[in-house]
Structure formats: C-alpha cells, structure tokens
Image 1: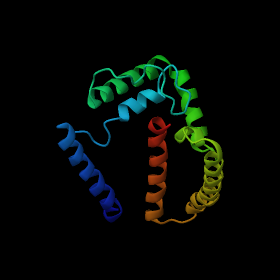
Image 2: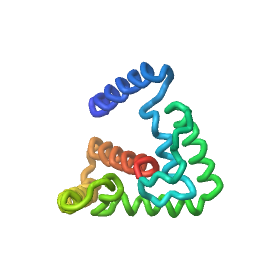
Image 3: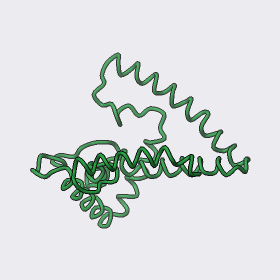
Length: 166
C-alpha cells in the first residue's frame, strides 16, 4: 500500500509546499476549490460548469478569501435547499457518466473542431466505459488486496470530483 501511495504523497506534498510558498499559509491542493464548490452549489447551478452572473466577479478579494467565501456560500445553499441540491447532484452524476459531454469542459470549441472533438471523445468514452465497467465488475471475482485498493481509489476519485468538477 505504501509503494502504491508514495507517488501520490510525494506529488501532493510538493504541491502543498508550492502553495505554502505562494500563499504563506496551508492550502492543501487548490486555492480555487471553494469557488468551484460555489459554482456547483448555488441557486443558478444546473449541473454544468456555468458561472452564474456575478458569482465570481472581481470582488477585490484575493484567491484565498474567494475560496473561503465559496465554501461558506456553497454549504449555506446546501443547508437551505437540500432537495434542490440532491437534484443538482443527480444531474452531475448523469452528466459525469454521459458519453458525450463536450459542453461541460469545452464550450468554446465550435464548427468542425467541435464535431471532430465530439467523435474522438465519444470513441474514447465508449472504450473507457466499455472496458472499465466490465473490468470493475470482474474485479470483484478476484480477491486480491491490491485490486481492492484500486477499486477504492476509483470510487473515491469519482465521488470526490463530482461536487467540484462539474
């Protein structure tokens, strides 16, 4: 387990050191995660990376202040609107696992580039899902602790990204 985790620990440690040097305080991974959390948890959130009007305008705050403000406002929205939040999260999950999700990350691509990118993305997603889902299912037939760790890594990765990524 240690050898499996060592590259991740090393990479994250270096990034934490970089953030401490840049911001002069402990920032585990990103100075923008609170802002992204707020993008996904606000009255105008639709499950995609849509910046609602005025959400992240230039407030005169630094990155870390906006980060903290984003977490506060996101959690406030969740507490006040749990049913709406659940619907948004379900929409995020369905978008995350969709085969074509061009408008989530690349809304700026237009015309022939968009068509070509959509075809490549669709083929890649079919390959990943076509091999990944059966591989995950068949991994339960194998009682190897390393396979179990990989499954846990997959689940943690997916479910920790959904609130922030989309």
